[in-house]
Image (tube, rainbow, N blue to C red):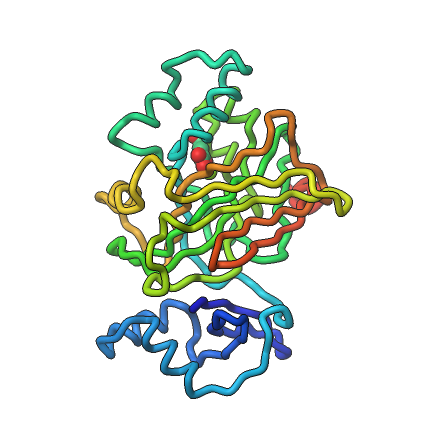
Length: 298
Ligand code: DO4
Ligand code: MG
């Protein structure tokens, strides 16, 4: 069972459940955390509460008919980096202009006990399905990073799984790792959606498959896939470091790193379309636009 939000005829955000056959059932809750809190009060799982409600609702509404928005207003999005070998190789390439020295920061963090965890986004910077993600005007090497996101509560308990795009500037980070916040954070640099797959509905998250496709002028330029099972670390290990002596809020999203990287010569362009698909969650689609066309600096 998945949880979505869509914009209804009255221009309001409507929370809904989506069954395996893509039927949409409106839910009488203001947001995702409200179902979680209600289920806890009842001593039930979120999946049980949603399944009970859905069994009493008649619906013919199809997922493809609704205007999707972010399934949750995540107060913060954090991200883990260099958690897959592919990411380590790509970071080494951009930091060494392809000379691939050994013992870089990235080699060290890949093997270290402490993972790389960084702040990625706030609710105001985070977009959802079909919203544009932006390109920075001061970077010539930008890519999407398709990642599994964990929706967690303030104690670090996993509530569900979501797809995420950690938009990244390879040239800015490659120039100097201290530029990481600028390589990672700007307006519309993070997308999440299209649904939250409830934790109880997933037997083994390491079996989930992550796919990324990039289209330009309706032509597919890139298509790559990986499995969460290729992660160097466990999901709990990443959460453990995120919440350690930290204030984390209910509904926070932790992106768990990328394992699908377009070829080194590829950079995104205005007008491209990005798809991040995670099995059983769905396809997160975003068009690409220039940030400079929309952001005014005073
Ligand atoms: O060190 C940079 C971050 C890498 C990252 O975002 C990833 O591996 O997904
Ligand atoms: Mg990333």
